[in-house]
Image 1 (cartoon, one colour):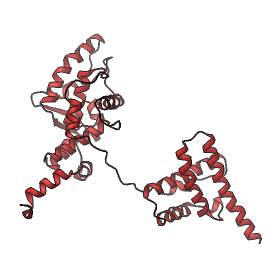
Image 2 (image 1 turned 120 degrees about the vertical axis):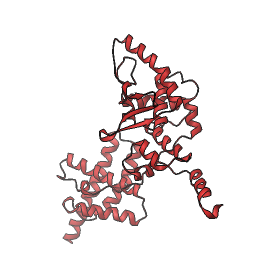
Image 3 (image 1 turned 135 degrees about the vertical axis):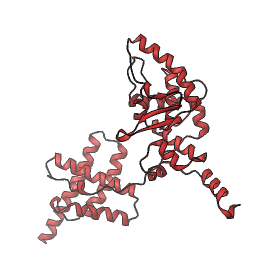
Image 4 (image 1 turned 90 degrees about the vertical axis):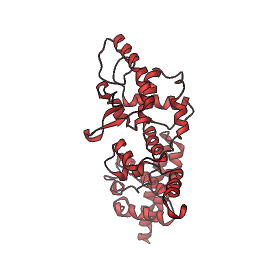
Length: 307
């Protein structure tokens, strides 16, 4: 009888802590969605803990809890959320002085499938870059060039802001790009980027003269300083939304669109790898979405039974 009473008491300790934590979440103005999700997950955790006290619940016990969730048919995303809830509970318990360690930290988060962002179509990208820049564009000539380089060259945001005027090889229609790990590569640019560059450079010079500066950066702000990656992200989003694209468009979306559209138009995967500056072809394969149009085209052209 005594053992049963002790077990019940221990079970009450875990359940009570969960209830206290959920109350704390509600009182600290946490998101109602978070509180609701954590409530489901932590009540399951309390049931799994059973008669064990905090000292008896180690990382192996928590792994067992996640295993139980998998057995119930929960997805990796749901299991990852449950683990996040348990970690949050332990963090709060540590702050309250109830536990000294967080065993949930020793449990690896389930690897979630990488979702590729939706890439704007070729038509959508042309509609953004062709025609007038929207009224919200504070520096339209620069902003057009920014889109031409991000989408036309497939470069990263950090590579874009790192371009100096001396890196432009106009006669060769190429730009020297400094990529990850200080690796350099030349990336070609087309006629529309060349026209955007020609329209921007005199405006850039005027800004520098007005600011009494002599900057080396290709892309500058209205004060004559080098444009930051954060500013590029903000400008790209605002212009994309003004032109009718999704609010989740950011500079990397344009790089992704570059690779995907080249693939759709029949470019070789290794050439795309070179242009994007990927060290491994596997990265390019993950990065570019093999569109059905491209797959069917290759099949029709190459498989003997398709002819």
